[in-house]
Length: 443
Image (cartoon, rainbow, N blue to C red; front, side, top):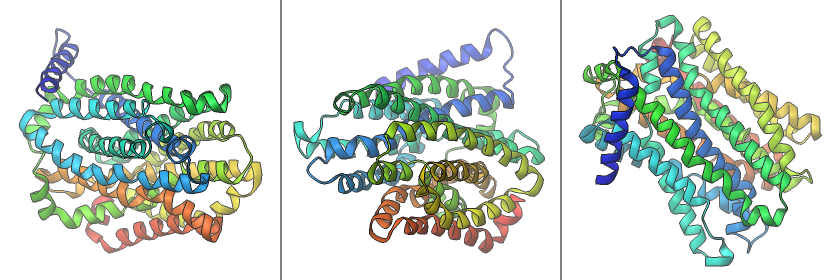
């Protein structure tokens, strides 16, 4: 730990040197936006590399003693461990933030995230070490979650605080661009290796390479984010208690209602998140004869619609209000929950229509999910409260989606998979309707 502190100080010094460049530091919102996008892309890349492997690698590698469907369900059962661990990471790293600074916190968190992800690429299978392969995977998945909790840097809040009120929807969508970018890179890597390698070589060693890429991306993202968090502008906001790490438990005691409501508001988009990324991949692999690389390329290409819709969400939110856009998005997602299974089971054209429609709806709603949090907390609780809200929203909205959707589809038919998505939409609408103060602040 002491060595990590030393390295973090050295990285902060390097970042300050780059910033100063011999003159006065003046970081603009556009520069902050670039740092945010790079950071979020690296986090989502790690996230999607694991998610894709949980469908096409881990069922065979870790659970070869059961049929493929059961193995996939077992693999999906490990999926939410990271989401359970995220609040623990927030608790631990907020303490580090208060004691040693945000640069140290980010350095340790991102090195932990990269190390845990890379270590997954070295895991032996069940054939080599038996049940220990599953235990090791579970431990590394928990470490991923702890690291993601610590990777919260408040840069999205910084963007919101540094722009005019009538432009907050536009800047709220910028951090969300990391999701489609991370998905495209992860999906393309796996598509390439599955297409140009034999099945035996891929499951033996080819799947490991995307995990190795993660560490390099995290190092780049770390420096990009340190370059922002050590600037005088950011430090000033920290000193003004706009973005100061507060103790977690007292924050929960003061702001529990806002945290709960804030976690419910983005449920629809977070539930849809995995319904159009992880679940369809498992369904295509298990229930059709299509080569998996084909669907991975489709997913990569259709993610362009995800990017486009996120950008449009910023424009719409500044014209109609974020709450209105989230409400309309939740209603559209509720309607899509009934149509989605029919499209996914509708052959080639249906699959593409499912992906395009799903990504457009996801982009419009997910694009504003980060904009529903920070302004609802007292200034001295904003930084920690926003982190906890994000942790809980991901846990309840996305953590269980692949397992529940696949289990429902297998037992009750594909149409039943939409029930999880419908429940997320209902949760969002209920949160928006019940909390009038949240509604006032969002608009």
